[in-house]
Length: 113
Image (cartoon, one colour):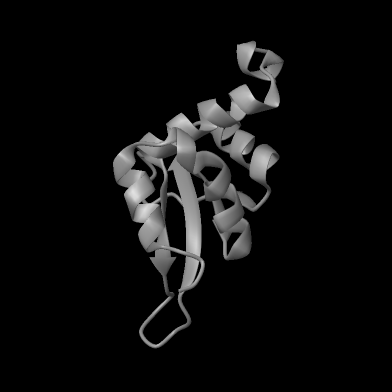
């Protein structure tokens, strides 16, 4: 991978950068995998830039994979996802750098649910 200015940033600056990207492109919330299934908190981001998605994996752990293409004409997408306590830990670190709307949503997704 080519070196760029991101690699030279201190960890806190990388966190702020990732938080801004997640604020615009990521999502978090409480979901289930079907009717009657257990609900869990999750954080996810998906985009065509593998190196960017890999940065989330390097910073927070969780899952990182290539998605199945829905159509051959579309670009390959990559996804990062954390679930449960690890997802809360990730969003806890990023939330203070996100917009008010996201901060208010996060209050509704408290760990007690």
